[in-house]
Image (cartoon, rainbow, N blue to C red; front, side):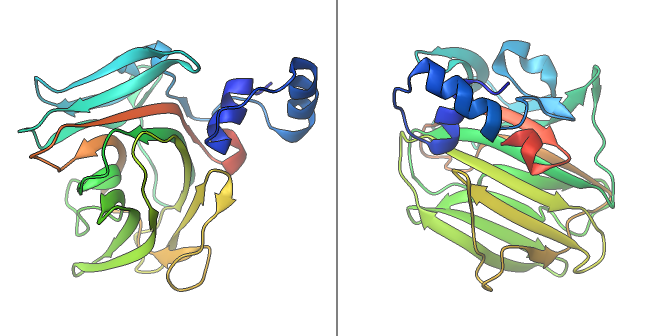
Length: 244
């Protein structure tokens, strides 16, 4: 059964709910609180990631939150350009995402600053690739912004909304993977609400897979500022219900 913690994170709010009502509501309204591929709970330690891209004195650590318990703290200091996790580990090995697959990524994030950065989430390409990053979520001009990059360095700002520091928000990104120019797609949900993209659709058609792709969470860019990204509720699954 989903926990009351998950309900609070999805709403982005903090409120009291009578226990009996909470349990009854959750029993009927939410799917099981488990990811079908990967659960990135901070209690599992950094071995749950494929690897870390965070040079000292930056750090990725599990810290205690008074309401949420163990959460991730990605601490990127001023003078550093990156503090991210790279990929996920399943069964002790780095997980390989497959062309043609559909994957859902869910997490809650609280940023210490809305200074411009390059990414707080990347769907990043590796190996012999023609797209450096098919999809990123970043802060730009005081707005949380999603950017999609097509082959030939065609870059599209497909969604944005005002950003707020020190505020929890829950993100769900759906990706259907394809190396065809418009064979894949992206969906975005924020705090349980599906978002419309700049073309008026809720599913952006694009190329989403290169020779190898991995998710990256944390902070990339904002080199002249310290930025902390607190992250909780990390999950990867094959349906939206797995990660919400």
